[in-house]
Length: 115
Image (tube, rainbow, N blue to C red; front, side):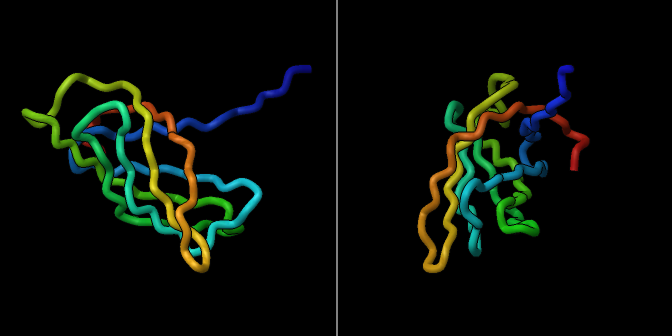
């Protein structure tokens, strides 16, 4: 019998100044004092995300990020983007070391009424 095996997918609000959330999951090793120093859209100039909050979740294998979109494209926007690829710079450990994060595929929405 086939089983339902749901998978997660990241969806971020691309409206300038709006908040979204992103979950990073570590495999085979715990996060120690994680700090995300940059979140950047790799396929579109002028789009990045400020990290408003980093939360290390119980078990030390998941990090929740609250992100705020920064859209500096000319004219307050540009072509409508429906998906993208994020580059994330993460420092973790004691002493802190750069921790590689694979590029993260995301879907975008443009929700002016979002938080």
